[in-house]
Image (cartoon, rainbow, N blue to C red; front, side, top):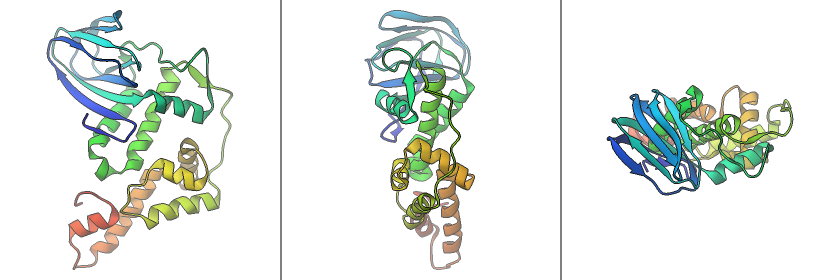
Length: 253
């Protein structure tokens, strides 16, 4: 795998014509086509899923626990993003969503267009290898958005009731979260850490923080880092590398 947050991983495959088999995984595999329209056959546990020309920018989900087998007639460029079932299930529970029948499952996993899902996959795929530079908050926010999209459009769960409108964070919650980010600019702070100091779930924290500040947590933190970097750059004795490390960037700006 090229990278991961502890929850999501990704790889990119420039597949030559032929057959590809894989073992069952404990993660749902989001397989999306980056380039090319090719005739493609796909089986899940020997059950035929698709046999035809796959449109460009389409996506399929290989559910966790399924053994996939694919035959491609022409070369095709694919990216796979792995989302653990435990993470997806945890997000459903965190949101208070119920299952329509049985356990949480992925439904209609055949290749089909989903521009929002593909955009999230591409952003997350680009973020994971550079997580030290972009920050854990950014990758975790993308992973949470990706999980929500799967739950909404590709799963057998649904909200238990009409969503209620919630306000932002209480002043003390916002202060604690902001203090943590400002006091540890060089640390890799995650969404769960911030939600914990505010005493709420990560999903609620993300929504409430944006409502309180107008921006997601990772954008707020990035803005503070940029302000701090500008202040440090006024010191002629500090190099770009020293400034980058002091504000938590892994590379020189």
